[in-house]
Image 1 (tube, one colour):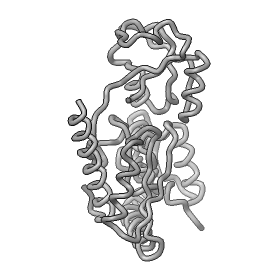
Image 2: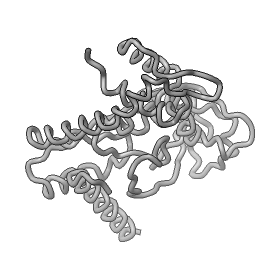
Image 3: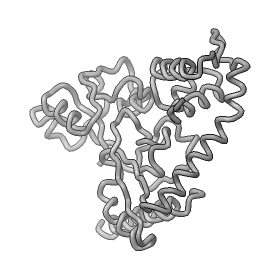
Length: 271
């Protein structure tokens, strides 16, 4: 019997959290999707792993046996994957979200190539429905993201630089020619938003905590092209932004930090 390692990661998160909602937030999946995955694992194993109640998810005897063994299984698999990639392709998998460190990425990759000759960087763009760009599911080794994002407390995070939030408007919008717009003037505007399951990451880009009253969502998108199209077509407006034990990842992060410092110095010098 073959079991997807992702199912085991989902099981481990529910076992550790003892609660579907918290585990779903940690894994950055919807609660119905997580429930479906747990049921799939139980069906494959032919046994019940959790007892469900209003208080949460309690491990059954069978669940406790699996919970004792899964961490070592996943750790061994992750280590085997890293060693296989290192011995074979020498590929560093880098997840990224559209517009995250876009300008600095070429310099980062070039610097990493000088620091790690023979290594190739495999850039993998993620949809906005996954603000961790594959890190939560261990699909990538390192990622260029935007803060804040769900689950960041579980990861090693280094901040490269900060940017102000601007607002994207269709050219025909009455406020489009303004250099500055008070956020209060946008409260009644429909916004283009990420999917609802992205939870507080979506709320951050809707400015939910800074509002008085309800926010309006005019469209939901998951990719940059869809996002721009929704804004251009007048469906809404949107905010937009103008250490590791793996030595290869550490080198990539160091190159990111160097590139961020270089951008900052250049910016200061031109002002």
